[in-house]
Length: 183
Image (tube, rainbow, N blue to C red):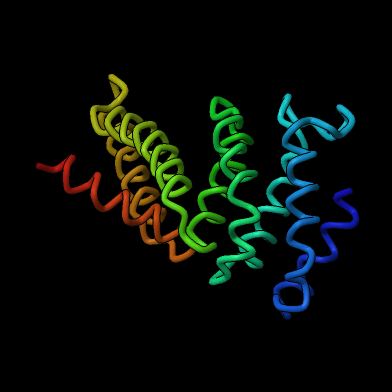
């Protein structure tokens, strides 16, 4: 299945309008993958076909951008992935991140935006706890090691926040949470 979806990505990026009629098919494939209708060999750490889900979410983001009709066809499957995806696993978070990117690209839907905000909030909570842990240090006897770790963490954090490819909804939620955090 991935072998047929993968080669379609590049042509879709070049001419989105020629592939609008395939939205229903891509949604159908994504539903099948998310509902574990593929053989177990497609699973990665008990997550059904994450590479296929990611590729299809990227394709749907392209096809739904600025197109209300196409976007409406994908709302349900994206919502299902938000609800069912395992956020305790790294690959699950990658799929959730791609869902956020998809939601930020397609025609807006309040329910999906709320789900994306909830996932972003969980992401930021984990990041905040990690940054807090690093800021407090690890209790090392070597203050130089703690200092280097803190410096590296701050640089990484600023690089992530400065990333231009982050979805706008992520940046909006992040800026609101930053204001609340520093009050």
